[in-house]
Amino acid sequence: MRRQKTYLGVPAYDPELSADIDPRTVRSGVSALESRLLRTLLRLMGQPRIRVVLWDGEEHYSEGNPPLGTVRFGDRGTLWRLATNSSLHFGDDYAAGRIEISEDLPAVLTELFRARVSNTSPGRIQRFVTRGVNRRRGNRPTDSRDNIHHHYDLGNEFYRLWLDREMSYTCAYFPTADATLEAAQLAKMDHVCRKIELRPGDTVVEAGCGWGSLALHMARNYGARVKAYNISREQVAYARERAAREGLDDRVEFIEDDYRNIEGRFDAFVSVGMLEHVGVDNYAGLGTLIDRVLHQNGRGLIHSIGQNRPEPTGAWTERRIFPGGYAPTLRQMMQIFEGPGFTVTDVENLRLHYARTLEHWLQRYESHIDAVRERFDEFFVRAWRLYLAASIGSFRSGSLQLFQVVFTRPTKNDLPWTRAYLYQPPRTS
Image 1 (tube, rainbow, N blue to C red):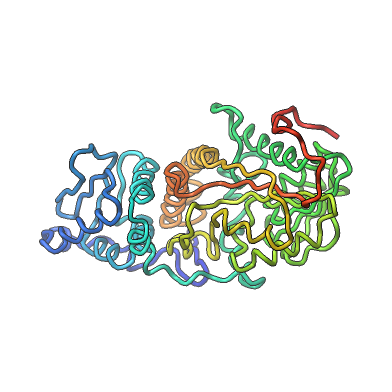
Image 2 (cartoon, rainbow, N blue to C red):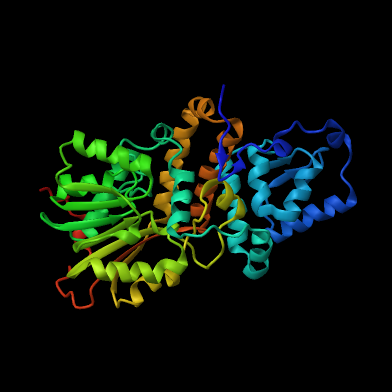
């Protein structure tokens, strides 16, 4: 018998959403008010090039452009829920089967995000799509543990189904368009190591290490000594076991603790995919911490999902997928560096690399869908399909970015003269 997941006290499969659609509702026609309501919703969304089919077969789409896909509403309750809180209910109704999307799911979602991003009235659109957003969970130490447990402790076997061999759950770097996911994740780790000019004997602290692939890569291929902090118990246990198995546990220490408790002094600070869980209110504190732990000639890199203008995380993503998560703007990220007076030496946007990474993840997820369904339930299966596909759409449309920011002490003058060093073969210890 499959177990039903509960996320932070919220059942993952809501009975009122997942119940069979009432046939009496389907047979009843669409009222003039409901047709007008849908047209208003589509206008507020920026007139996306999609066809919407209502429960009685009535169709709506923007004239002049062929639709890229079809969104079907199972009953009138779906329409009214979207009108009251689209940020939450689109995801829940899709996961419950009340919304169906034909054709290419990532393409349809890309179009929805594209229409929103390209609209010339962002204030009005932002107010519409984010109203009703749940109050974001905090990022105090106790909150952070709950938030990380919610997403990352679903079980290593679940993530092993669709991640690469290194279990890298962050944006890969594709040196060529046809590179495999495995090759691209290794290339990402080399890209990071080159950016911080990693040398044999360097000491590195990593804040938020996932399943440990980058820390192990820095030790194995660059001769570094690494301390890696993480508050996901399952990830730390996996990383420690792998370090011991590969004979690297004398050079890499995995510590189950909050980044705020980092101790020691290091040549380099690295954080890949952790800033999204820190919270903007804690950025200045993070900068103070980095200032405390970096040597005088130290350097660092922060790799984070970002956005062009500050918008709150959607209610569905906050509630179902990433509680406490937030993608910052570059201006917000600067709060980390300005207080201690760090010099930002390089900013790179890998937005399309993350879209490509997610395409690989979604393809692998779908190829193992029966195994996912066996571990969880149908709501979970559809929710994570939507999460991965919507993430593809967010990066393709420019709704989300992927920033890699490199920084140093202001007096560090032995910097590479050009960026050619980033594209050399990796160093080995």
